[in-house]
Amino acid sequence: MQKQINIKIARPFLPLINEQKRIKFFYGGRGGGKSYAFADSLLLLGLKKKLLIACVREIQESIKDSVHRLLSDRISYYGLDEFDVKESEIVNRFNGSRFIFKGLRNQDAQKIKSLEGVDIVWIEEAQTISKKSWEILAPTIRKDGSEIWVSMNRVDENDPLWMILAANPDERTLVAKVNYDDNPFCPQELKQQALACQQKNMDDYRHIWLGEPRSQGDYKLMNASKIRQAMTPKIKECSSPLVIGLDIARFGNDASVFCFRKGRWFYKMEVYEKKDNVELANIATNMIKTWHPIRVFLDAGGVGGGVYDILRDRGFQEVVKPINFGSKAINSERYANKRAEMWDLLRQWLDEDVEIVCDERLFNELVAVNKKYDSLGRLLLEEKEEIKKKLGHSTDLADALALTFAEPVYDRGFLKLYGNGKVAIEDMFNESCQNKTGW
Image 1 (tube, rainbow, N blue to C red):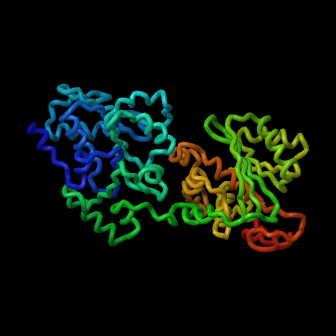
Image 2: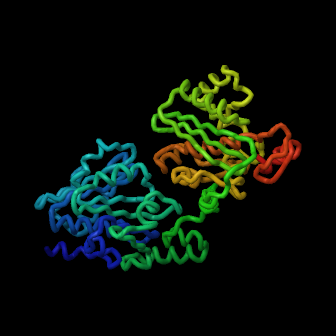
Image 3: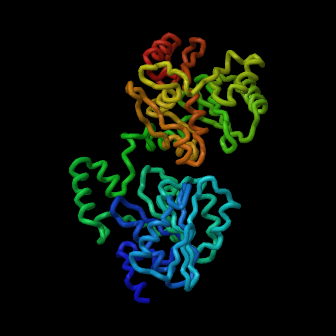
């Protein structure tokens, strides 16, 4: 009993052990003591009664990636001989409390069934948890009275778990912000580092030490508020020619997506899963015959080349244009590749008075992409695999929309309402050569 009393929980974290809530969501900046407080609180509860506690994170390649070491260190610090620290779990020899450790990435409902009897699950580094992982985990933690503890340092405005749990919490969710100045155990050295950061760069200070999401302008390609604004309905019809972007699935959990855009109006998308090349070509053929697009820009990388070959053989080579994301940009002095160019033209287009389909997955994909620059100062985008790790899926919807900006489209020289007013073919050609919008 004395050992339990010796575990001191800082006041900001007392709700972890004292309040009955389904979700306990703690966030903040560096030095707030979240990891130590969560570990100490769980050890204290594991001493009081038999509990099954799961410590999970998005990616855990080995036990070294987990909080196993932190819990072991805290057990040694407090001299808690009741706990037997094993290679892959921690067990209380007297009351049977167990700590287990899991990675969520690539887990399906069957593999994660071992968590059904969990009393408390601690989601560590929750800013990395994808929406897909949460949707698998949440219904699995179903035991009466079970709790989900969340600790995170916010990264983006739309961190998936922040949007799902903390942005608009319900009555069963506790949300608490804890920073270094709330932590009575914060070392003086960390306080001095925080002060130095505050004096040097206020934006870094707010993000690193106050737990605020990073300023989007520094590293994000897209502006979240502009996207939200574009998702507000405002256009009922448009006289501009139809352009379709087709992003073709490469892997089993990816989707093939058709995006329909007329000038300032992206008004429809159709998503297909587990379709082979012939099936996708048949769908595209029907769309071309029904909607008469002036262009279908098709992702020709990977298996997409096969779909293009079929459509070309059917006589649609004047309409269907193959696009390789890694190919040379039209403006190769500004963009490192075609992918960066298309996405940046989409970004510029979103600065106009436009409308796009209101879809949360599309929003998350658009704001997920970070920008960078190559040695020549040309725009590059974050690698697709890195984005997929964050989202749990590829940017299929956003890539299909970006494809509608692959090349300028002309409507036989007739005056049409495009994004920037009424322009003739000569004006459009001149604008495209100068790399302005007018797409």
